[in-house]
Image (cartoon, rainbow, N blue to C red):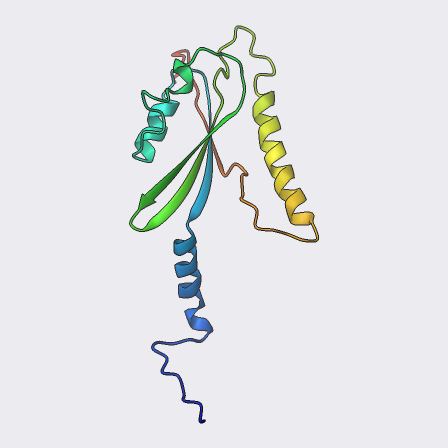
Length: 155
């Protein structure tokens, strides 16, 4: 039996590698972690809903400023967004109660602890001898909302 040569369509050399990586990445999808930090009522939930054209915070699941608890703790919400055949697993890290207390000294500590713990978890997973496919839960972007005070100096 004689082996028949394969009819390859297109170029298969290393010049085609970016296209192969692109197709593989689009097929697998992407993960993105976004942290929003700021006082209640500054529009964090509204920005997230508008930015990703989704109701991450809906009447069934109200935003952090509409919930009862007012302690600074870090909460995660995940949503799968599909657009044009590309999947995005969006993780929103929210900090309800941040900056809402009378004494805000050390209110940033839970935020720093969360970011550090996620980076340490990822480093520990990468340092293992047997690495397994681990989702990247590190914070890729942090949006810090500053309340307008109206006391700025304009020269």
